[in-house]
Image (cartoon, rainbow, N blue to C red; front, side):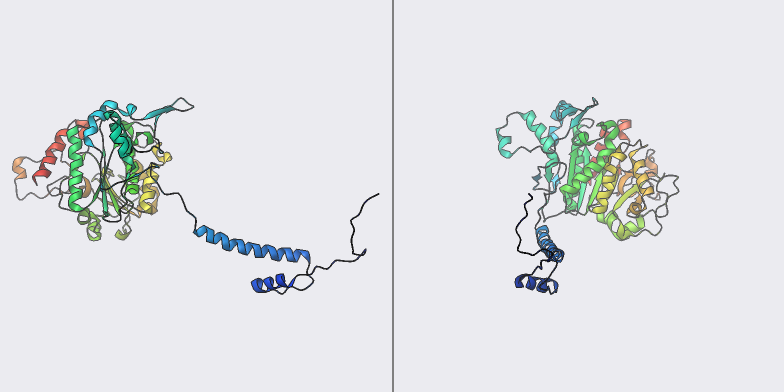
Length: 421
């Protein structure tokens, strides 16, 4: 025998659903609806669903406004606040670092394909002052100083330098005197113009380079240090990269006076000029100076000179640098780093519209390979050289001195001239 539940309803009758006055008031108040005493079940469920949806939307909006996100960090998760805007490594550590070599500074890891590479530890914690006092191993202190140097950040509201001078130095190929002169040159200029300095060993970026070979990948470390400088100085407006084979010769001229001032930049612009030599794509004739986000010098032969360039510390500057850091870019077999930058400008018109190409002499004046004789140099009627370095220029570029083996002597000669003035 089948059992049936008891019911007070007679067979064939339909149950009528009644709604309480309280629920009726809610629907009338919230939705402007009047619910009768006899409502179908689906209608009630639909009304309750809409009511709950509106309530959840209100609460979710309030909760979203109270969301807390993880703090931004650079290449390292544990950072150290810098008291000074002059950030550079201890130069006196050079002999120990050279003795340790890159292999003694980093751990190595072998992947599944058998490729061995240096590893960067983003979660690595810096030594505390107490730990430094207790440590008697001087080599360990030098190693930790090297590994912790990239953790310095300057985020003070005041004083907040408007421009950061960025330079890479090398403890393996450069002489101690050369590195000292380059660092002191940047510090002297920054102190005089109230700028910031961000100098790091190029060996700090080896684990991040695609081939981890400084002889072939040195140029690709430039966007890496510039991006790190952006994070280290979030309040700065511009970052000025200057190669270690260059010296600032005129400490009295600010970068604003020499280039960033709109009137000066307008005169320095190379308009309707091939982006690179023999290119059909030219710089815009109607380029708006106010839109400038990147400034790159171009040689008279039409080549981009990436030994010195300026990038704004904003969305466009970050996009420009992160494109140059992308694996698709770094793994491509470009003829040179500058050729890759030229490709970016030619095939991305929006970035080209934010990039000012200027005369090379303004940011990286090269040394004349055939300097005039003393008689010609003393001739008062001789005009200033429009292409090569002459006294009064902001920067002298000794690019190529390493191939000639003259970097130490050349930098010493020009550094003495800066000191005399």
